[in-house]
Image 1: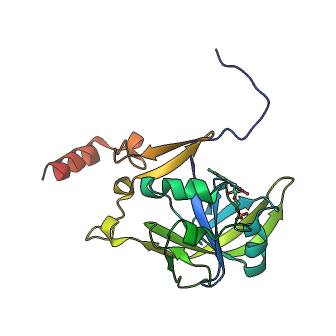
Image 2 (image 1 turned 90 degrees about the vertical axis):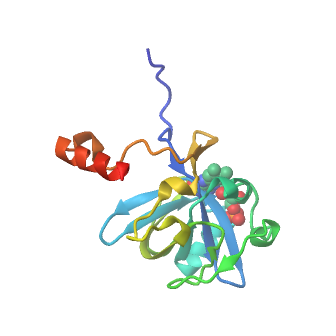
Amino acid sequence: MKISSKPGPLTAPLPAVMVTCGDMEDSNIITVAWTGIINSHPPMTYISVRPERKSHGMILESGEFVINLTTAELLRAMDFSGVRSGRDTDKFSQLSLTREAADTVSAPMIAESPVNIECKVTEVRRFPSHDMFIAEITAVHVDDRYVDEKGAYDYGAMDLVAFSHGKYYRLRPQESGFFGFSVMKPKTAKKRRAKKKK
Ligand SMILES: Cc1cc2nc3c(=O)[nH]c(=O)nc-3n(C[C@H](O)[C@H](O)[C@H](O)COP(=O)(O)O)c2cc1C
């Protein structure tokens, strides 16, 4: 039996990312769970931010931000960035995080995060509670500890964190499948098994 309830944003798990904005001198960090991918080519993403957040005004003004993925090591910093406003705290200093210059935007990246995604806003869509900043991804950076010799990314090893209905969960390195595995041909499965054994 399932209990029906009033409609709510129950999709899970969501990424809880640390979004940086501003510039190298005057920057801020906001935790955002309302985010995702909206197009592949060109790569496009969005973040939905309430107008009352300090970051909202900063992103509206600059038209730029960086999405920094959260690891288990960054979990406390991510939570803190989501419960304290940049109006009262310099979150970078308070959390001893390192600003790193980005390539295509003025907003700093968080050096301690393994993946930084530079974004330029192309459109702002206003909704009753949040404004949706639709953006083009203009550059990405992945810590070389998680890139193999063929250039493949090892997201499993990053120990990323997910957000599900108010709680955080670690995505421990426990690969449970891969894109398209449910329809993989037996021949391909055999090849993969042989490759793994090597
Ligand atoms: C896990 C988590 C997810 C959050 N997701 C969002 C979000 O998607 N959009 C938003 O506007 N605020 C979100 N918040 C709240 C902001 O991060 C929070 O209000 C923050 O203090 C705003 O900082 P600022 O005033 O420095 O911009 C989230 C907070 C947490 C802890």
